[in-house]
Picture (cartoon, rainbow, N blue to C red):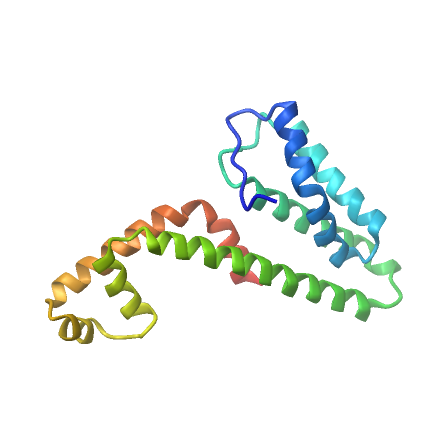
Length: 184
């Protein structure tokens, strides 16, 4: 499975079939963790793909399609839980399944996000990356970085500012996933 698929402005039948093949199984597994029922999970994922096809002209497909699909399935699963909670005699088991789904998905999404962030960090100029990592990973103050690298505080500030600008641009399309992870 590809981490993110970008599609041109319109979703044609061939591209839609490729999306379906790549994502139906993983999305069903994701939904199954919420619902506890394979048929319900498949139905939820199927409905998401039907809605994607019906609204293919309205949806901005230049964004990360994977994020859109997982968010849609997640929302439908939460609706499923809400609508079926009154029929579930063992609510504790359902809540436990929901927590497990979040933690498993969080692990997968966290790993993917770390990989994306690392790639973005690798694209920084070497000195800029070094200064940024000293600030973030070693929790050094600007003065400490300046002293250690024998550069001015202003240069440290410039490198940090440049790194933040590049990271914001590189990671802008993944903001939905980051927010989703933070909300959990």
